[in-house]
Amino acid sequence: MNTLDFDQGNTIIRTKDLSVAYGEKTAVSKISMEIERNTVTAFIGPSGCGKSTFLRSLNRMNDLIPSCRVTGSIEIDGIEINDSNVNIEGLRQLVGMVFQRANPFFKSIYENIALAPRYHGIRSKAELDEIVEQSLRKAALWDEVKDRLKESALALSGGQQQRLCIARAIAMQPSILLLDEPASALDPISTMKVEELISELKDEYTIVIVTHNLHQAARISDKTAFFLMGELIEMNETSILFTSPAQKQTEDYITGKFG
Image 1 (cartoon, helix red, strand yellow):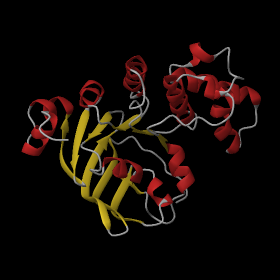
Image 2 (cartoon, one colour; image 1 turned 135 degrees about the vertical axis):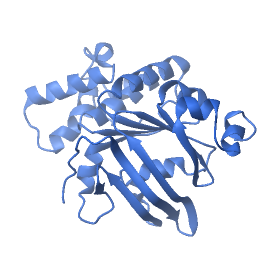
Image 3 (cartoon, one colour; image 1 turned 180 degrees about the horizontal axis):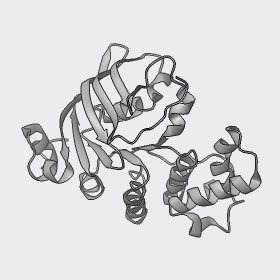
């Protein structure tokens, strides 16, 4: 199978006994998890607990690390994404990723959005114009940049650059967006705009976010997973996990006793 076709089932991501190691170091150990479609799922836990490694495994970004070994299963709508016949480029179109620090290309705002669709065969200027506008609208950025599309993306503020990176991911029409600490380098106002954007986008996308900010997880996520030392300690509805955690380790973390 060279492409991934998304059906209408409620569970879109399922892992079973997923482990990830870098050389001799195990970063993630035997994690089984289900993530539902059109929800926001937050991963929390102290630095080095495996949450970003787990996130990167969902679109095989860990493949780029030579020493990395992945065992166990990752299914997206029933398709095992680690099978050798899965087209990785196609996978990453459908499972977009936005990183901790905004990384716009050294190009215009327009080209940051249009570059990937053009690479994948779209040549019509009218079609590219539509993709750029709709992507920027969905990222709540259009009104701020519509008269500056030919300017360098590097002229945007940090918060605008991060929303541009979200728009760039949206341009490839993904079903899933992976966000790795997308607001950690932003000021409070920009962080609020990104959080508002995430809440709006879940109507169209399944969103998985890694965050160190417990208040952020509580504000924007439907479910929260707590990681510790490479293991999944607990996952539940966010309101339940933050008010009535089942595990003492979770309670200690969210009440600030460690981490």
